[in-house]
Image (cartoon, rainbow, N blue to C red; front, side, top):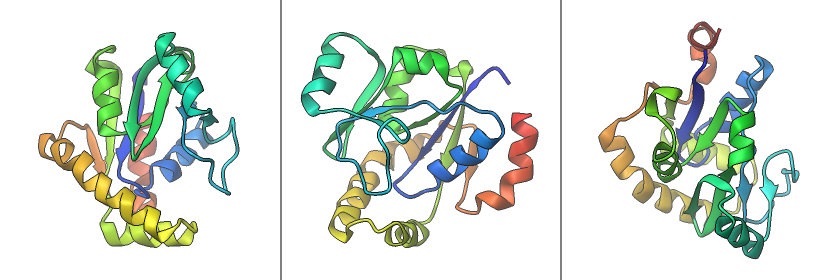
Length: 174
């Protein structure tokens, strides 16, 4: 497959889980930059390139990003260099919209992680996210995903039972 895979989904929808499955099959995930605070379970350079807000803004001014977005009061972005190295991305709907201004839609296979809110909440609790932060993220998700869900501009929609779709995914990505 020559296209890059793009995973899009709300907080705790399974994007990271699916990316880990695909990484084991040889896919190279994009490592995005973010200005948000590192979580206790994360490592700089593994989960994200964590940078200060000032550094992120400097990188914007230097035109280092193929796409970037502000999401839940933090900046996230993918540098042109990291984009060239990867074939698997995790993006927000707005991040995808920004990317599509610079790349052809046919270069991408977009997978929407359509996981029910109750399942996403279980995952947030399991990973120890702050309840107030989860509530804020979920409210932002509802707003950010409203137009995306209405447009339905994805190639595949998966629910939270990723393991049930594993054989289908292997066929698609082989």
